[in-house]
Image (cartoon, rainbow, N blue to C red):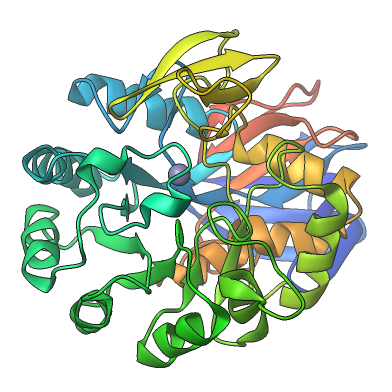
Length: 389
Ligand SMILES: [Zn+2]
């Protein structure tokens, strides 16, 4: 078997057209060369009977993992956080920053832009600083700013073309100008940490907002006479909606309802993971705030029983939970890979098990626990199989 030509066979393969059971994938170098149903047309290099192959997960919202953060600490920490998630199936991710003093945000943008240059991360997500204190969640209200296009331009410049998503509260004065500046720069505007009404959110979508940051979390609840941002974001066909389907942030029924309403083309599963992902209970930081993790649930240390502070999940864990909650496997794969790839403008390059796309894939056991990860044709963790490789 030549090194750059490999056939994986015998697994249930999740493709945009449905699950091939069994199916095979032929890889050539860093690309998927061919995908088919039934037995492979040539001997399998890796026999994956009893396992699933899903496209590599793409996380649009992640602050850290494995004890390391994008939001603070040295560059090596940010690399470790990305590596932690990659080894667990997230083959592409945006590094998410939280609200912080402006000079610090600029410095973090500049540092993370270097990691994007190196291909360690797919870009940056600014979750702040133009957020509503009333819906701050685990964000520091002392550093929140009124939306200001000049401030946006500074942060955009610091990120050197790698800023991909900015979350803002559209009800704040000045938000329209930032939505316009971001849209003009090709940055996706996400509505989140907002107390906006449905009408205000509709106007923001008309102005160019196309994404929802962790739908339902950090916004007013969907009320039947004032459906709020959540109702408006779900209603509009051009909006992609993040869900933190980790079993903590949302009731499983809400996950199913939102998945049904948004459909696989608009649903985006995210981890919103912080440094504590993959780590034991204890004390951590999220930006400037202290966080306590107990029983796997992260909460602000100064607000016990209060605001949930990001998650301790990986996107693979969210995928597994969403499937257990009743979302069909192909829709989960679309929401964890295909749709976020499209949001990043990578829709032709990755995000699906289709010929011509990057060989980014996750092999899961029967219970959807990631067992092996391939990124751009390279095994990050190898499958446990007996046959030749
Ligand atoms: Zn977040």
